[in-house]
Length: 178
Image (cartoon, rainbow, N blue to C red):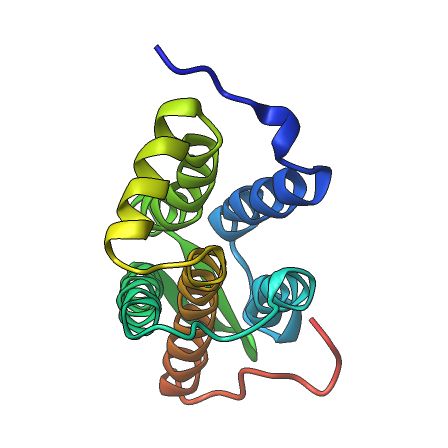
């Protein structure tokens, strides 16, 4: 049985993933569909990109891995936004994630955290190293893949919710932030 070496994961690793997971709690209650609602997850992922991103993958397999995880993220974001209720009342557009949207968000954000925890186990590290050598992937490709998946998920969700808000026939982004 492999043991998890959580000491290898930094406070920033844990806090970024847990904050992104916790955002589902905000999505479950009805909120104005405004700047904060749409861009808070994007801002958190942008900070993660700023902190973790060092270079684009240099191998063809690294590019394929990043394209694959980006596609997964985009798909999760579109489906989560499609499963979110958007409506207009009293001059304001609202959004509220349903149970399926919340589950999809948790799957996307939780999968990245689970992968990181697995990669920090002796068995996971060995398997990941073996796979990476066989497929000519370096650590940069894995970091980028996880980042691109998160970026895809939050951007797709924000864009689809924005478009759905516009489809209500009302202004989504009020003059005041909210």
